[in-house]
Length: 455
Image (cartoon, rainbow, N blue to C red; front, side, top):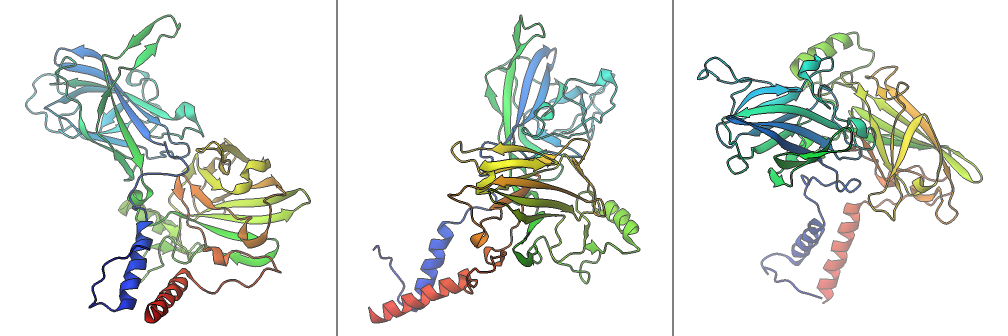
């Protein structure tokens, strides 16, 4: 066994405690890493195609492709920003607009659309006049996920850039790209010049290509998106009366003393005024119903029935947010029996297999015009479905919480699960362990102390 030098002025017990903490920290992951194990290659790719040159610049078509399996951008939509490398201006745009014009006082006659060094661009709304549209524009910034609706997983706009280069050698790519959806969460890499995009005409008889193309790749991190979780999971079963709630203070704690208005009771006579007043203060932060978990979304997994060859689960998604309707919502579930789904009721379903040999992950979403809209908190603020699984004699069991999911995502964000020791157990199961992880570590430390004492 390798030995490490230890300062003898430190007691032996303390030095071994430090060593164990160090070993544990070696297996920790950075909280800001934009990597999703269930969608390892998911990203939003921005493609900037220069289509033709102008006397002082170029005309480009910018397209955002959402290559994420289940993470989408909902209303109020995406916001794209960058910094020009030189003194470029935007003469005109089709399919989008900048939020500010900037100082264009030095121009006479034709005034540019935007003169800012760091423009911010937003999508146009549905219903925009046709002469201001191009293909894949004008959706209010909504960008659907690749699995759920690949036909609407792209968004485009056209931009005419002036005071720029007029050839491949003189053009400079923009820098410092930012993507908000609508808040933080996405981190964009630098623009990289790639092989020019090619386009096939509608009659399939001719292929054209862009004069120049560069790509920007943006990845998502839930830890950058919000400071606290956004959803939690509760559990129950037919074989145990215990209903395991979401962990207390999962997404925050009720604090009406130092933070009045952090939540509102569902039967409060001031509910309507609270929702209106909260909206004027912060357009994006949720106003949730007062609960022990304080999460905007709760997913409840109930093991409902047991048959000879099958077993049945009921899933209920409840919205506790008074200020948000979730359109085109989706949920991702990881469970070892998802490779044997027999039937699913009132939800759409598609297996996700990022690792081809393993089929334990499924994406679920609502049926269009039926339950694809999760209403705000209240009597209608929930959707539910049931799943029928076929039993696998080699793996199936109700023992030790096997029937409950390993992981659940809602709208691409990982939901907080209850601790495993709190799961509903079979009536004849052995007593639950009373030692926590901290208790186990203390036991190891004590053992090491005795070993060192007798060494």
